Image (tube, rainbow, N blue to C red; front, side, top):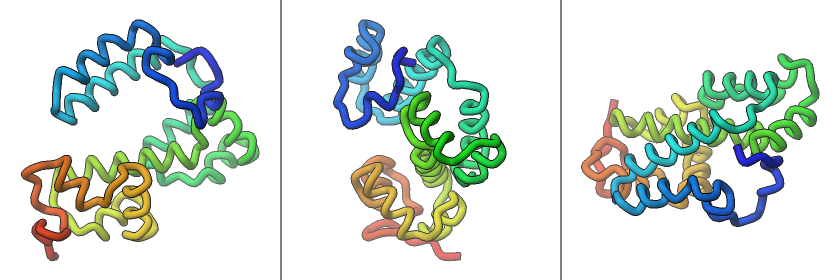
Length: 178
């Protein structure tokens, strides 16, 4: 997508202009033009998909592993992916970092987090049920990922970013019982 090994960006702050050049200006304008988070995420997704389609593709093995992670909502174990590809876990990890920019476990974690976000947008549920349905070991694992990836708790995320949504439990939010 950027024309360089993506793991070279780790730990660095790179502006959109530095990463994507002049093509990022339209995206920046779109992001500034709206306060709606769904519209912002849609704009970012469209931009990245367009860039990904025109940039270098991962090797067939890494592409297959990525598809497998998407198909399983991030639940497939890295060991299983490596075994099915006939390579070591270490080799798979290195190729992912080089071609995707993240380790396969990190990609799986982000996909699983996205599954939670989609799940809570559509129907009320208990956090423990959401955690189970989305492949987390338990609710505390879900909470930990939310704090690390969204910078907030799941309940605060729902309260702040999904206004009018009343179905996930927490302080001041209705609790749905079976």
